[in-house]
Image 1 (cartoon, rainbow, N blue to C red):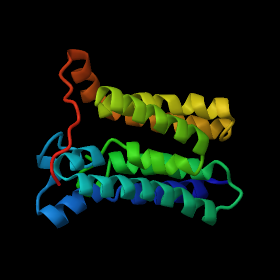
Image 2: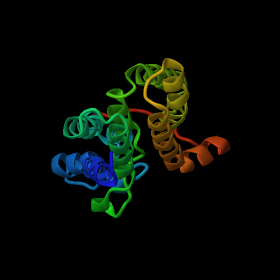
Image 3: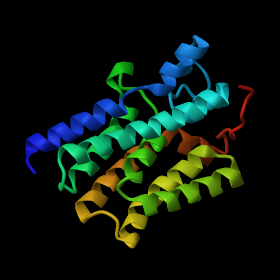
Length: 201
C-alpha cells in the first residue's frame, strides 16, 4: 500500500459519496429544493418528511453509493485490507461535505451504513437493530443515529471485524456522523428536537 493507492481510494469514496441523491430526487420529482424545507438536510430523513417514497429511495441510494465505493476499491486493490476502510470514511465525508452543494450535505448515516456493511456486517446489523429500537421507542431519528454510530467501533472490536487501523477509520467516520448532529444534540438537550412523523407521499 502506498500514498498513491490511498489517494485513489479516498477520491473514489469521496466522489461517490458526494452524489446528492436526496437533492436530485426531490428536484426531479417535486421540482423543489429539499434544502429549503424541514431541517434543510439533503438526507433521507428530511426527504421523507416531504415524500416517504422519495425518502426510501434516498436511503437506498445513499447506502448503495457507500457500498459501491468500498466494492470498487476492494476490486481495484485486492488484498489491501485498509484501503476499503479509507474509501468508506471518504464516502461518509463526501456525503457530509459534497463539493456540488457547497460542502453542505447530509449527516452520513445511510452512507455509513452502506459503506461499512461490506466491512463490518455483524457490527452494522447490531447497530441497525439499536437504531430501529431507539427510533421506534422515541421517534427521534437523531438520537437513534447518534447512539448507533457511537456503538459501531466497540461492536466491531468486540466481534473481531476489521483490523485496528480499519476500526480507527470506522471510529473517525462515526465521529463525523455524530459531529454533524450537533444541532440535534443541542435541541435534544433543550427538549426541542421534533419527533419524526411521515407526511403523505
